[in-house]
Amino acid sequence: MSNFIFKTYIADGREYYEYAADGEQTIKKDFPFPKSLMGLLYMDIWELEPITKKMDKALRTFYQSKEQTDLQPVVAGLNELAPKHVYFELLRLSWLEKLDAVDSTAPRDYQDLLPHKKISDLCSNIDTMQKQIKGLIARALDVDGEKKSVSEKMVEYYNAEGNDTLNTFQFQPQPMSFEVIDSKVFAEVLYPNDIYDLIDFHVRECVKREVKMRVCKNCLRYFAVTRKASTEYCDRVCDSKGRTCREIGAINTWTQSKRDDEVFKEYRREYKKRFARINAGKLTKSAFYAWSEEARQKKEDCDNGVITAEEFSQWLKES
Image (cartoon, rainbow, N blue to C red):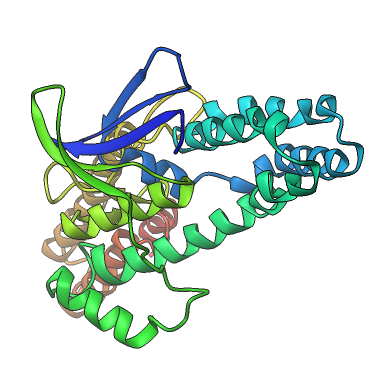
């Protein structure tokens, strides 16, 4: 049984974490659900590979030397990984407990106690799961996808692709409890054995709760639609000024509106000018109507992004 504590649960639209090493003060964190999962989903996991490589090398060296000083890079790596994501706090606590057990473990069992592949395979395993989860979201939780129930879409997805264990997310049994928390909340509580239990728990909760997902129009990443169903932008920070996609989206919408307004005004000016030439006998009706139809098509192309506003303006001047 572990001497450290790590548990997580979901209540009132938030995900809660409580964790502590043996004898240390319990740390409590909470975030809007499913922020942690979505953060991991788009983390550049391969940026962490230099850390895991150093840890893996140190473990291999220790197997040969049996010198505990050779494990210092492992501790340093755990401490470096933990702040990257709350899931890695579990990795840190579980491995620190393993390292504390070295003194009471026979040297022949070191590789079983400290399996280096758990570290060396971390990035590739999470990379695979990122792809699997994005596939599941696209098939079952994308609010702009097929207009069927989540249950129907999950059945179709797993009937068609469930045997493809490399590319399809595979749910596993979970170490769950059902308990009162802080005398306030009664909820399912996960006591994870590893980081993959945390990922599994939050993916299944997204499915159970039928969390609506949508691709953000700015960053093109999935986000949970927790506000209005028509929301098109996420709350991720997306530029060096600290602005979110939602803020950028509002600016873009305003800019587009102004642009469309200017295009329309220019189109109307040219339309009125040519109509006046009919009354002055300088333009035939057939020529005007031919121009009008072509101008309408050009404006539609501009509205749809086929041509730019500048190109449409230039055409108006030259037509």
